[in-house]
Length: 432
Image (cartoon, rainbow, N blue to C red; front, side, top):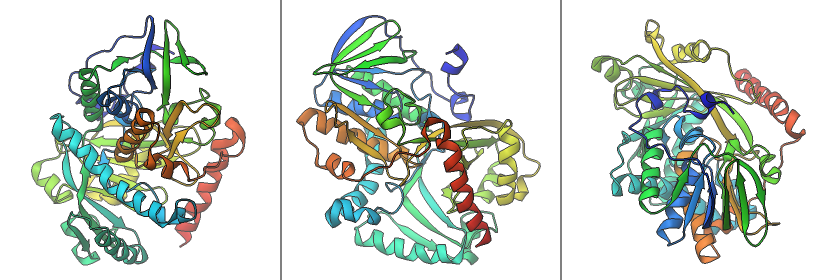
């Protein structure tokens, strides 16, 4: 692994990140109650939750804290676990469905509470709008709004008809929207870096540039890196799309999919106000969805184009700019200052995988957030800590009850087969 690949992607986020303490590489044989592998939202917040419960924790990150999706994503803090959880009633029952619906809401509040309690400076702004690409999608927003009301959702929601969409976004593409004042957007890299500082203050020992080479299972787990070993009673696998073959029983259940973002030059205050009048984060309903928002310094951050082929575009800006201009043709003369991509973990049913290994019950994992990682990582981290500390977590049992398929085709054919399937769904979408 060369040094360049170990540093953060050259993104808007890394260019505007607060000063980050460089954590050392593991260079000795150490012991802890729990070893966490992965320095993204799942791993760092699992470490926080475990340390708050009095357990000693060592966290190993192969590159830098927040190197993966946690430090590269669209920064959209949106309620929900993923796709419609009602479809999992056959596995979790109606009470389980209600739990998952509440978790999708309360997980956002966990993030907000952590930011507030520890004064983490990460540009948090409230307000999100779902965008309907078709009248049928807009009609479905009415049912969604009603469902939120039945859950006693305490934040304001507002349906926006097609004739009022200029109040939300300066684009003529959309058939309506649903504003949610309880979701929002933030600077994800500054959030995870701030949370790492919280973990360290709680006594968590964090090590960067420490890729795990081997895991030896038993009553205690031995985790070996190039220059040291961690012996722990429990292990948390928090690698998501970057698990690779470290645990083959899990890696085949998550497909690393590429997602890409461009950031414009700073817009004038008038231009930013005209483009997204209420400074909301926005996301449409397409299979290959568009998501976008304004940064704190008034750049348009425009992302999407989920790639399942395993190959990134050679020129991300050239690939993403036409998508941005389809939404905002008025930005034709606007410069692109940053372009970057990353891998998100996609599951076959678009539902996160959370639980423990049947063969090794002291090994816990959470992965496959399928685009909802910013909030759900914080929730699953709490469940993992509950289970490790108390020996049981009712919430973990609900998540674990949902079965997950292994993607067909083995490591070599997984991505091409899914890419073919997604092409079919997009073709159906285009043909209407």
